[in-house]
Amino acid sequence: MFRCLCLWLFFGLATSINAAGAKDGTIVIVDPDGVVGALPTGVDGAGDIFGTFYGADFVSHGFVRSAVGTFTFFDPPGSIETHTAAADENGMLAGYYLDREADHGFVRKPDGTLTTFDACGPNALALAIDSRAGAVGYCQAQGMSHAFIRGKHGKVKIFDPPESMGTFAAAVNHSKFVAGNYQPDSGSSGFVRDAEGKITVFDPPNSIFTAVNGINDAGTIVGWYLDGSNRHGFVRGSDGEITSFDPPHSSATWAVAINAKGAITGYYYDAQMSHVRGFIRSAKGRFKLFDVPGANQTYPQAINAKGFVTGYYYLTTADPHGFLRYP
Image 1 (cartoon, rainbow, N blue to C red):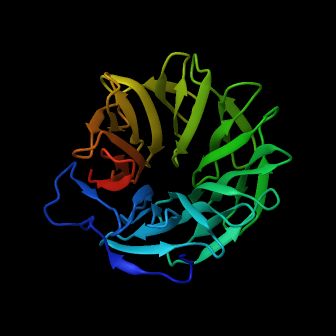
Image 2 (spheres, one colour):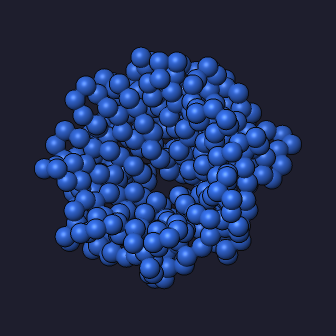
Image 3 (tube, rainbow, N blue to C red):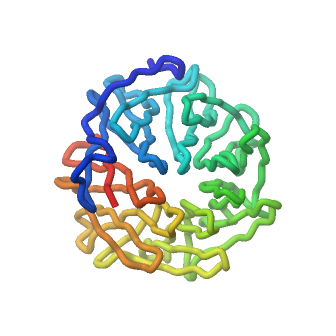
């Protein structure tokens, strides 16, 4: 089993993010050698990729792939399952791990320093991070989930929208605005909490289930919602205006991340519901659609300020593989 202070470095299958001759839209594979599956979840401004991989023991571990293709594996002390959740533009990483008793959160600095923490008693799942604001996620107490923000100096604040039956913080920006989801009496709705603690709740028109996935430094929020018959992407401006969208010829849409320029990435079912494809939507609403060559399912998970997209895909097997798409 891997431990956070025992790191292995080696070169994987992929080429450098700065590889000469790479063309717009080029997709490279970012699996470490010898793994069963890889699930990238973040890409920073330098082109480093962060994620989770499964070894031959089918146990999950964290990884960092540098922009030149070198892999570092890590686990918090005592971990029997490690899950990386997100990274910011500066290479700060957030995630969670399971030991013999409970789930715990962790943050990892670019130099490899790893700090573990709990929020509601002995548990926490960190889902997003910003180097200025800190990490956010959720924890459980007395049978309910509560959102938290853990500042960069370690102070934890627990919060819930009024009358919430369960709260999940999913994203945070430089200004300490936290976005996420909460459960009212039924379904799921979105919320945004400002730096002073004021919470605004919202739903796209006709939504019966809203899922928030990202927020950028401009305060623009992205996610998806269910309107009773289908799933659609949405973007909510800092002024509260919500725009619904779907890629061309899609039958269901999941928007999962937004970058500093307002570009959104996610995935969708095609019209025949036979393939899951990736998309990038510009701030002006223009779409680029893509697949990993040979894949029948492509799942983008993150997009950096330069427009590099990372995520995972499936071929005909049940094992996921990582990819990086050039802008």
